Amino acid sequence: MKCSLTSGETLDNNFGVFVDEYAHDDIGVVRGANLVEFRAMNRGILGAIDGKTICALSTPAGMGGIAVIRVSGPEAIAMASSIFSKDLSGTPSHQAVFGRMIRGGETLDECLATVFRAPGTFTGEDTVEFGVHGSPFVQSEAVRWLIDAGCRHAGPGEFTSRAFLNGKLDLTQAEAVGDLIASDHAGAHRLAMKQLRGEFAGEINALREELIGFAGLLELELDFAEEDVEFADREKFDALLAELLERIGRLSDSFRHGNAIREGVPVAILGAPNRGKSTLLNALLGDERAIVSATPGTTRDTVEDTCVMEGIKFRFIDTAGIRETDDAIESEGIRRALDKAQSAAVVLYLLDATCDSHENTTKRLEELKVDAGTAVALIWNKTDLHPAPLETEENVTTFHISAQQQLGISEIKAWLLERARGQYDNDSIVVTNLRHYEALMATQTALLETREGLKNGVPGDLVASDVRQALHHLGSITGEIDPEDILDHIFSNFCIGK
Image 1 (cartoon, rainbow, N blue to C red):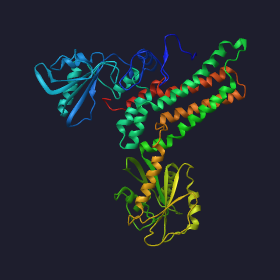
Image 2 (image 1 turned 45 degrees about the horizontal axis):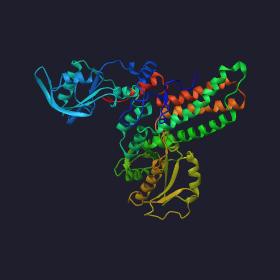
Image 3 (image 1 turned 180 degrees about the vertical axis):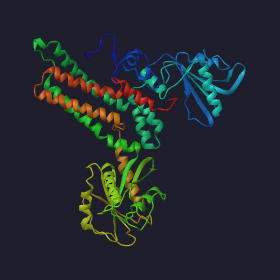
């Protein structure tokens, strides 16, 4: 394995891949057209590019004002022209033409046909998009006409997979397309846009480039093994490994917060029975989601619901009351409540000002056994009936509320928003994808083994093997090195037409 550039290749400073001097796309990413064959042959994703022109409905199925039908491939313009009242062969790129969708004297619809010429398209191929009226009949017939004209119906995510294979997007950007489509609140949208712009890929490729230099020197040493020549400065290499481990650790640590922002910040509501947990859940949601009863032990399983506050999604979890019990079902509910506390980003622990005292709060908090990164707030409820103790727990946020009377609820919401914004209202890169997190952890393991090998004087070929593993795992994130099953899994989760 050699890590140096060969003649005629240049290095893309933004993404760390070998590129030609041309092939600029419309979102500012530079890629080489010669990568298509390499990607297709070495990855086999969805059968690679089979040379067929594909088509599909790209807007949601159902009735609407306008529907978009996308055609992409080498014969896209010719096949689109065959069912359109005007010849599109001379139409400039990124220009719309008004006409009729017609075949054999039968007119299906009046529509717009927008032409996009390669390579300046999403897929990197010639593309035509028909903007037809949103009748389900028109949509299905238009697709059928295109298939009759020679198109193949696109598979799930095939437009985006072609964009990846044609070098228009790296794999993290392709996944960001899916995240952007699925984003249902401002926080998820913000993270998807950062990834789509290539910020995460840029950091990953920067890490790879720094490692590749030393990897090349280690590989060179193997070629001169008989001469016992050492090219790689071990002290500098160890310092580099320490720096890379710190940066990778920071990225992997961000996954918990990034995933919480994307899926909804998990907030577990805990406490003994009849402390007002279900009432608090309803107050936070602004809806009667949980059953409220004076009978202890009413909630025996977790009750979850989400809401979006000022663009941030929260996932509130009402849990079974924590107490000693011989009831098997209630005991299982309590076990689940403690499990939710351990996986939550925030725990709201409820106490009743009319019957609880401060002296036991420390013990109760210790019983939760939450992670160090979990925020815990003590909520003294029913303070409209009785004042809460004046003592406070050190380094624990405390609120005095009346969930039933809606007193103090706005303060809790403001605190939750402040904490959530602190996790992503900055320029740091946040990991939101489990696949990326797992690859980072595997990279971390390989680099730790590399560093340990250097300290113990392990032979260079074994050290080089660990470095290659680290490079492989980093490359799998952006798609520079990736097995077929991972790629197929990613794109198969896309909707048809994207």
